[in-house]
Length: 176
Image (tube, rainbow, N blue to C red; front, side, top):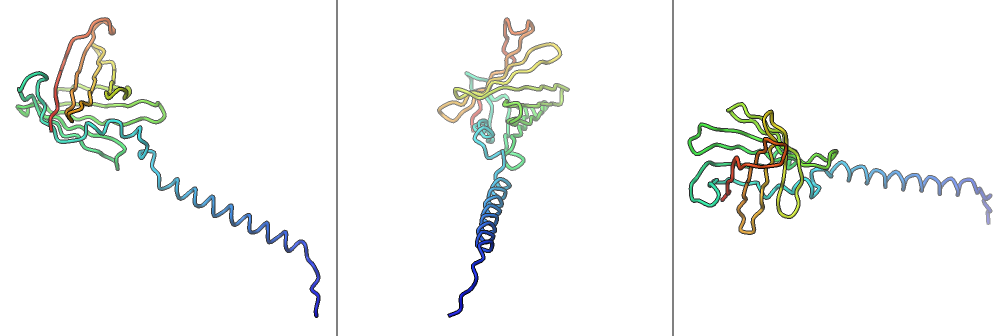
């Protein structure tokens, strides 16, 4: 019987190589998983999804139609785009909405054909989204209420005295 000389370096070398390959495969699996998971798959990025839909908008508390709003997911669900048209079709506007992970806040950028621009940011809590921002002449606060019956109430308030008193600029009820 032939006796092969023991080479301890070979065994430890093989063990080291197996460890390196195992670590490489583990790192590759983690990397591929991270590549496939978008930050937009986070529940935070979908808190405002209750607003997505094709809506008829009523003056809250009445049966008077004031406009139509089509809200759609954009950028593979990373944001929401609003497309507003009043009942006459003369006032149109759009907004982009997104959860800003760096800030930890929701943001909205609104523009319309009257020249109005709003930049708002805020949070979702207690079944409502509240965003605020500064316009040249006022502080704007818009609240979207996620109602149990599937409707959404949008209450836009403005303050000319830095939040001491508020007036209602718009109070709408969204129905699909």
